Length: 264
Image (cartoon, rainbow, N blue to C red):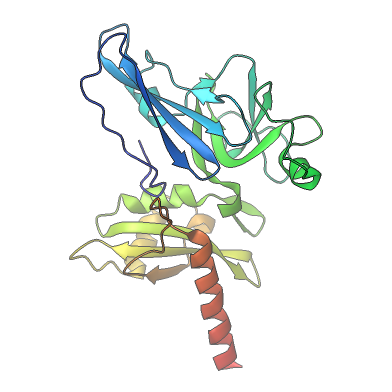
């Protein structure tokens, strides 16, 4: 299922015929989502999703026309032949267990040699063992199918625990009183970062902090449950319609500084 917070694209394809393949590319910051349409062996029209990073000259993962509807719509597919993919802990670099979230790393013939005339940026993107750090958070199941879970830079570290905003956002999107939501980390003197949920209520709904907090606690661990709630009328968006979380973090920081100056 496409996650509403991603706001990338929803493409409807009709009338696909056998041996009449089409493809369309959708530009996403620093990566491209390519959607191929065609007909599987069963005669049913299908969508095939593939991901490619700007630093990779070929596809990294791809779904197949004969994948199940669940795999075809909820995963990024499996790595291409001769392409290595592993999921690593963003802090230690160690490979995480199957199904656990970490940073998506890839290695192989498809990875660039480096950024032009910028060895510093190259060293930040590609480590000494040749692994390209994509900056994407994801997971891989026991069959090799990958899922995207967000961005490393959006990960919240609260008291040494890694918290992934996407998990919280997906839950809150299921609440009838929530039309849109963005979860970010805000500086905290004790925990390092605190979880903040910014919510745009659904039309005609007025969810309360207490209501949403109780809803989250039914499904999430205590450290993942937002402690601060901000209700907004709209979100700052990129031209492609994605929430600008860095703007939200800046606004929260400015608001905190203003509050501290008034109370000092």
